[in-house]
Amino acid sequence: MNVLFLSDNYYLYSGLSQTRITPWLISSSEDIKNLRRITTDWKFIIAIEQYELRNQAISCIRKKRSQYMVLMNEIEKDKYVKIDDIVYASLTFDLQPLKHLIRYYDALRKQFLSRREYEVLKLSHMENWQIAQRLKLSEKTTSTYKVKIQEKMNMKTKNVLAMNRVKSAIIVR
Image 1 (tube, rainbow, N blue to C red):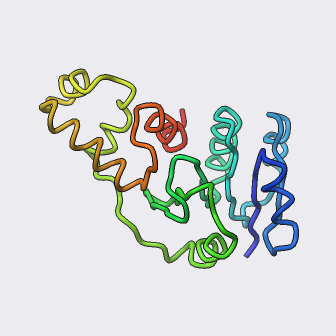
Image 2 (cartoon, one colour):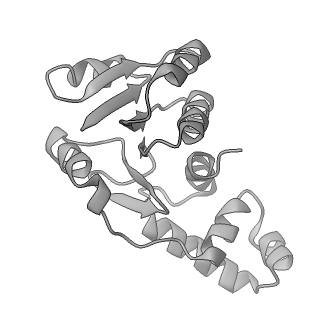
Image 3 (cartoon, helix red, strand yellow):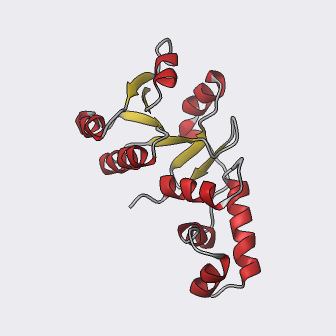
């Protein structure tokens, strides 16, 4: 299996040089444009901390219809969640659990976000009362959905900023 590890962190990038994972250092939008030349038989691991670059990479890889996994600081160490066909995992990882995720990428099964949880996540930048009004829910129900989303995403920090960071990786414009 061809796995390309995209990172804007030189230490993560260089730490993978002794594995069967091919590292690719992403430092600008120009590097992401170069991704378009890669064939679709590659699987991607996106470990880009800078939001704009990460979103550009996700958008580019989606257009290629390639499989990918996103590593994020907001998810607890060595935890992951699968939403639709994408795995979101912790950026804080040991090499063995990461290799395990890659090896069993196609077979991973985890809780999915429900349609309603996904709708709440898309509106998570708003206050609970605003989300409740828009989706015709109670504020308590909206709050419960947010808590469930955070639990399913194995988020280590449960605040609005972290929720918006997760949302930016899942819902790319």
